[in-house]
Length: 285
Picture 1 (cartoon, rainbow, N blue to C red):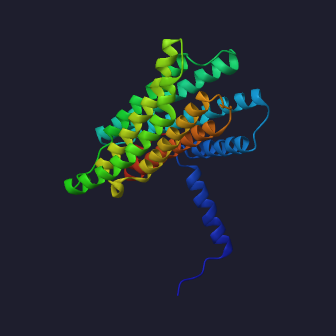
Picture 2 (cartoon, helix red, strand yellow):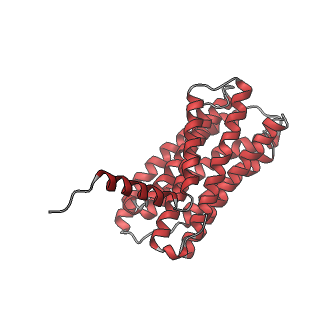
Picture 3 (cartoon, one colour):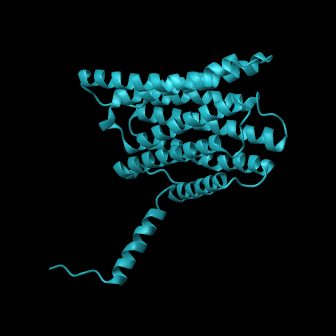
């Protein structure tokens, strides 16, 4: 019969386990980003401060989490052994970096310079995010799959893709195209966002068809969840903008923050998994 562990030994084991987690690269970074995300969402839930304060907090709060997601995705890319996975995660990191640059420029235009952030250079970063994310999703390697099962899955996903695409088109694209704008650049940029959302829906569907539900790693499940939340935030943002109901620190900003933290966690999980498989290639924080 084994000897039952004493309370002191159990406490010592718990402390050692905590220390082991803290010593893991990027653990404190993802922990701090998660805490910031929770504080951000609580502030949004309780309708923090006045309008100007909400604008400042909402725009500024997104930046650290976006930067963390970008850096973690780059480290996840460096930890990959095969070239295709490395390229895919580099593209994902680049897409996060472009969106982060858009957030940073948006903050500078609106909260530092006091200018309208649309249209501006921030839109260049935001719009570059879509094709880079699509390329990263397509580049992710996939295991061999039965063609018959892939065909059935393709039909199911095609239905879901059409439903999601119809929602984006009806709620976001058609009202955007029908809105009167004298500025052709602003009109073109406005139409670019819902088109980018449709592109990402196609990329996500392609990933699921090629890999299948049983071959989706945890990191990709989290990545896909973040992508869907970001798409939802885009639709809410576009709808509120068209109807003049956009509020800083509101539902769309909460969606973007949740999307960012899920991107950060997806990158961290991918990095940690790759380092468990080949710890000799650890990338220092």
